[in-house]
Image (cartoon, rainbow, N blue to C red; front, top):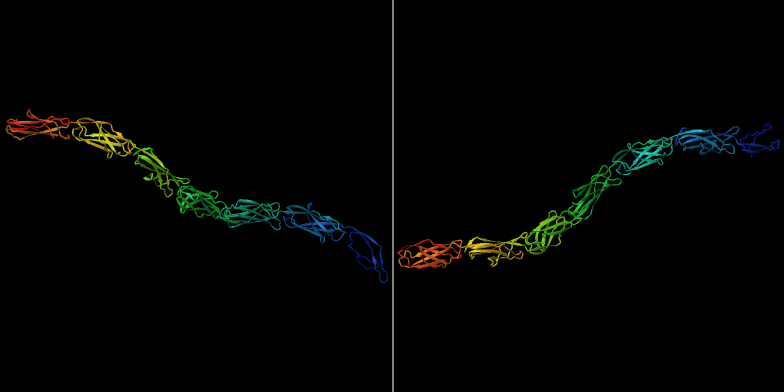
Length: 632
């Protein structure tokens, strides 16, 4: 290997070289000759070259630094004289015993830029590992101080504006302030004014918090980064988030549907937030049937209910109107059509008393009830029938209609009550109520007038036949009068009264009773026996003599007329004695109430003539006034 060439001067040539590598070298000098001298080669000169010692110096800049700030560690490796040259190879950089990295020497210098030093004091050294020509060396300790890096925190909230209950994502971005670098860790507290909303962990320099809890209004949001071992804390500027009321939607159902009148119908209004709003609306819901307010329900869990039995028969357009609250706007449900039909009914009929007697007032009671699930009180009228015959009509009051009938004939009656229905309730027919009517009892009373009476006077026997309660009505048929135990011809009842007038009762006391012979509706009865008295009838006697005056020896006709004194009746019978003063002239027999006597025995003079009726079994005696007769 040619190391170099040198010119001989004074027979000597020199060459200075630093290029011999470490090791043993066999050096020779070869003279190439000149015109005068031939060339020649020296003997071998053995040269030993060892590695040169080195020194390593270390600096780090900047110093002090902040966490994450790039710090350049510079190691300068130099040969220790008499060594010379520029060391090559690599330098390892250490933080204490921790290898930070390795740098390649270029021009005797190796650098390493690192941002990995933690906060604190670091004892840095650079270790040159040597090369074939230079020995390794270690630098003195370079003390590097790393402080926490300042940070900035930025806050955004989205969406903004938002509606109540809408999920709002609060994003805090925490960054190192140059020359600090790196990604802060730790936690961020999110505040609404002074109120802590929540805490989130910083990941990749970002912390997020999703909340739906912000109330309606304007919110001053801040994010407070709490720092970590390497980064100082920081607070974001205020982010103003505006939250408006969320729209709501109201849905209405009514059940059961269809329903019957009086049936409890539950109206259920479900109020929900319209996306993106979320949450559970509160407040009240008004339930309407068309424009008519049915009632108000309070929301619980977003649901308000109203139970009503007051919907009339027909089709109802139901709506639920949510009035809103501090967080939700009001809303109106679509129309829910509820159909209410007539409720079925049952009609029950009772008649009392049963059995009954003819003419007895029988109260027919119809009870009309709604058939479940229908409820309420049916109104309207009930028709009461005996078989196919309408007895009458009663108006329902409190679900009950009554009709009193006394005209049912004797026998069995199939009674029914027919409810005609009303706007809310369907009609219905009761089961048959069998009513038995038996004959009514009667009482018979007999009276006689006048009492007492006189012979020949008309005497009226009156029998009054009455229904014995509870029977009522007017008995018909006939009454047989018994006079002295002897039945008379039956006499028909008229208006419950039968009369028999007789003028033939003899003088004396007779027993009288009346027997009612019954009819289709009434039983027989017999009156108590009473006595009637017939006295003799009074009479008056009138006397006439003709001719008057008469002459002696002339036949004179004396006429006596005997008359019954009212109220006596009939024509007296018997005899009349004619007197001249106290002298009996003779006797005449009454015929047609007249008795006569002819006499020629009257002497000249004035005669006081009288007629004396002697009476009979039926008539009392009587004497005429004096008839003055003159005989010449």
